[in-house]
Image 1: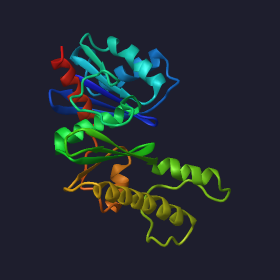
Image 2 (image 1 turned 60 degrees about the vertical axis):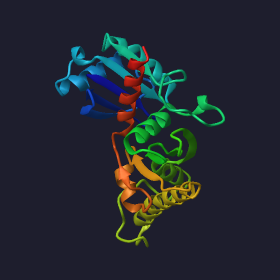
Image 3 (image 1 turned 120 degrees about the horizontal axis):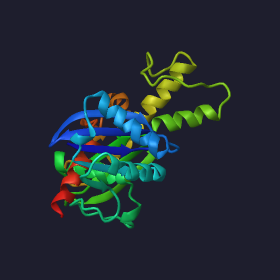
Amino acid sequence: MLLTVDVGNTQVALGMFDHEELVGHWRVSTNPEATFDEARWQLVGILGADGFSQSDIRGVAISSVVPAMTTAFRQVAPHLTSGRIVVVEPGVKTGMSIEIDNPREVGADRIVNSLAARETYGFPVVVVDFGTSTNFDVVGAEGSYIGGAIAPGLEISTNALISRTAALRKVEFSPPRSVIGKGTVEAIQSGGLYGHAGLVDGIMERIAAEFDEPVTRVATGGLASTIVPHCSSVETVDPYLTLEGLRIIFEHNQEAE
């Protein structure tokens, strides 16, 4: 089996694949302060709780936007498998051309998402990933990664608002009774949720307007299921898109040997 690890700024998404089938998936909080032993035993504990053992793992694929966690998982991986370890970084085979000014500055998660969307849904395609930031990534009509947009995520935007205003407080990200909030909590929910949905629709439509053909729109990330129901521009939610992209990259690099 293949263990896939996607390290984001807020959460780590884990997936276990039996060939092309995702047979296990988990999310844990990102902890850049975790020691090698903490990271190792957390992984072993999570996998063991669902009946997986280290002997099941034939390889590990890792993408990370947190340098300290990249180092930690790079060190832990050889203790989980004797098979191949693939870390998504410059030089790793993806099979997709990166056509932007400086390809090295694209986050690993953005490349992984774009590749998975291209292989799964065709192209041109736009992926919006709802995480700490809200990332829009575009695979063009020729199948190459051509760029995207980055906006503050829903949580970080709301937290910034609350931290700079004495009378406001954290709220649950659920739809208020109406867009016109009848109190402070509902007003924050309306502005945050519908405002972010409007941001997504606005950017999606501007991206689509730059193409002469229909563009597929796919959403992923931890907050996708919360925000997408209020968007008019997103066709599909694929919660495991990044994990699937890691599986594809691992297989590409197996073939490259």
